[in-house]
Length: 479
Ligand code: ATP
Ligand code: MG
Ligand code: MG
Ligand code: MG
Image 1: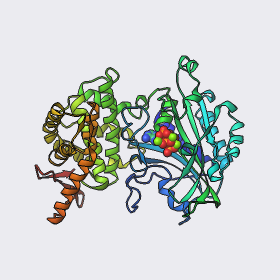
Image 2 (image 1 turned 60 degrees about the horizontal axis):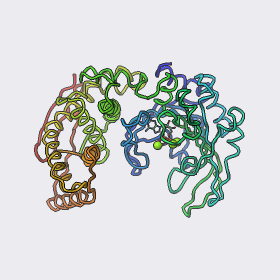
Image 3 (image 1 turned 120 degrees about the vertical axis):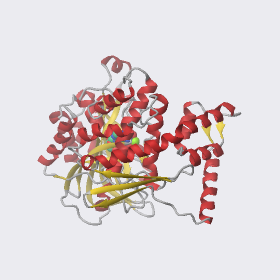
Image 4 (image 1 turned 180 degrees about the vertical axis):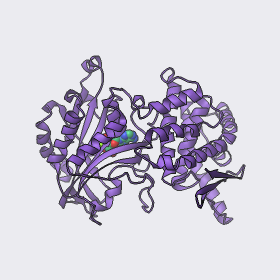
């Protein structure tokens, strides 16, 4: 089953269970000081769970664009290294706002996976909350008994508070959750170690696909728990992981969500995926990061030197450097992938088509700009490594790379890690603080990096690059 069908099957199924199907909320969050990017399907509905306002329906389902690169959920370091964590991914979800609870949530999840999507029952494991005495929380026997109808008891595993008790924050709605995991290893591998020993153990073929959260408590300001007057369900299923299972693949990157991008990267860089692990990581990182950047720009968040914009710039620079170092791409090329991405995902996310030119132009310009200093910066870093008298590199050098060559700190740290070195981040932070103090003293005005000017049907944008080595203004005309 291809990814388009998979997405529609999920939505159709919940529509048949009287859910209202809504479009994805933007991935870029405005007006929420606690969150820069939507990091789960629940985030856009947060206010309803807090009791502020009412949803259009008390049953909703959707696929939500998520980004996990900062804050509570930061998967950036895993991306490309493993085959199932992405920066940007789709989270399929169904919600009950004070309507159905555990029974329906569990029965429907099972029906969808095993009857509609026809996943072999024998590859599934489920987890339930084991309880926590210190909080007076009981084991979730209700969920256990519901699962028992379908799943042999040795495949229902107890989970601890970290994995199986969900909390929105220090205060607010919370409750036990039940996760569904798949074991897609070969029979031979399965004979060696039982799947239940690998659940929640970072095994690339024993992965969590769906999390069902049962909100039944409210955490009060004093830390105590009280029962919620109405109970809610919040579920999140990793779309790319589901596609991996349904397409009988061992990696998300081998599904049709990623293969068109990977093929295109291969064609542009003259490399074949699957031949050399270092290059494969680079290809996976680029295929992943281009999605994060494209979706973000489509949502109106352009790369910049501050806040959410800097998160996006960092992700893009990370991808550029992977291409430069491991795929020998010294020219801009990531922008070329937008054609493939929008052709493939534009049906589900039309903003990729309407904003295609903007996304392409912004990425190309960002690539041009960083490629101007990347080479020199890498030479400098190489010198630093060669002359280092310890395995920890000074934060002052990292600051110079940041300030003069536009190297985000995590990029410098990543390159150093690859070479077996670490970075003194405290020193870097101190340098950064000093610079901030200096510029505050000089009342320097921070300029946004990309200014989009709209004139009738013609859109122009002006790109400023505020790296100290250069100031550049470029105009583009959208046709
Ligand atoms: P994991 O333990 O694999 O990191 P999680 O427990 O952090 O996942 P949840 O917060 O429960 O994930 O999110 C619900 C679902 O979203 C997960 O079951 C998984 O299928 C999917 N998911 C989570 N993080 C990612 C990611 N970085 N990339 C792709 N899918 C993800
Ligand atoms: Mg996680
Ligand atoms: Mg997990
Ligand atoms: Mg989870």
